[in-house]
Image 1 (tube, rainbow, N blue to C red):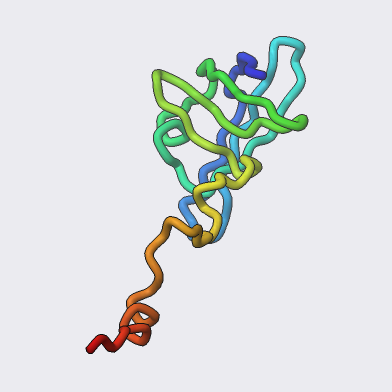
Image 2 (cartoon, rainbow, N blue to C red):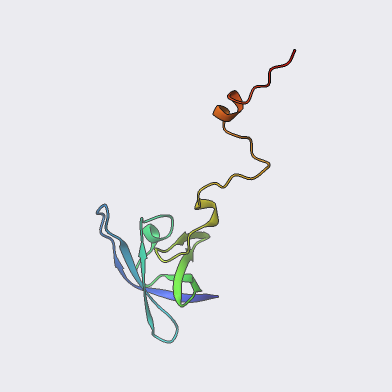
Length: 106
């Protein structure tokens, strides 16, 4: 589900290992605190009073969008592509296995 928000506060740390934060306020006046691992394409362009679109998943804002750009928040679910690669029957075996399985022919 998406929802419109107004940026009511920004807390940019510019420190490694600390999360940047933005407080987003919905139309009912409810504040939603969001955290980010970097300023990305959206947070770095936000100013207090800006309107953003937030994607809400399981009661948390997981993505924000503004001016055609989008950025995940710290609470976004892990992307399946980030999981370790799992070999399938269609994958090539590692080169070390191919080398060790040569067949002797007469």
